[in-house]
Image (cartoon, rainbow, N blue to C red; front, side, top):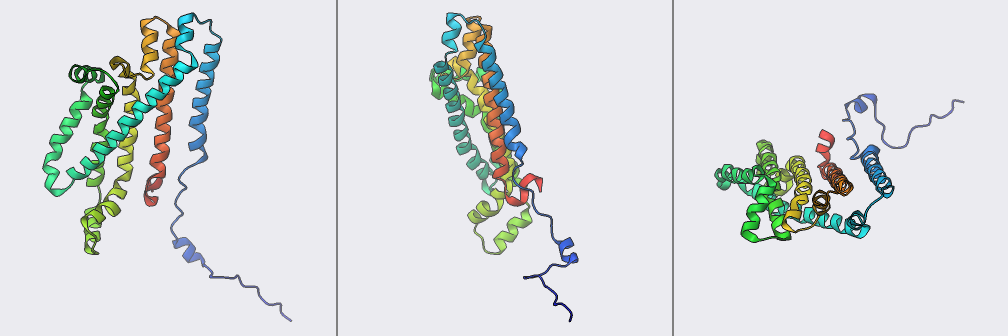
Length: 271
């Protein structure tokens, strides 16, 4: 007696169907995204700590490089960067959306030129001008950082929305979507990669600009760098500079993860 044939349970897929099936989208992150940069930054900080602890520091260097002082300056720097970046997003993204609407498009060249002036002006010169107008303090540092970093987010928002296929917009309108619905469900999701690239650029710019906040008495890692210069303490200058670079690389790494993770599924990794 012939043995009964065992058939697989559930629907079967033939070879032609498997060949026609589109390839699976790549995962959002690889293990290298989470390992390489943190390990590198950790090694840099470890090497810095090992080097400075084996130095014969004088009293001024010990006071300036005390953990409480360094921690306070790092937190001030992060606060300046975060506040200025949030303000950039609040200003640049809605303004970029507005300038791509039909009635406001004619104002886009003027607004972009104005934003370009803010970035073309040297950051220290911009802070000096703001100081003459508003005095010194955290407010001046944040305004200067916003003026310096608003251009990449604004220009990328406009470019991203302009690059959206008009046929997709018309198709969405054709199925009864309102203009706000088209903007939120079609245009902005497709513009996300360019917008996020602009945000990442603005974050790194703000880390650098926050270093100059020391000149307007707003704190940050610039205080350590300035102390190293004014007091002629090279070791203090090196510590402040390395910490600033590490913070900038950390912010750029976190922004790259956010940029990849927030992309629409079909646009992830350029697919």
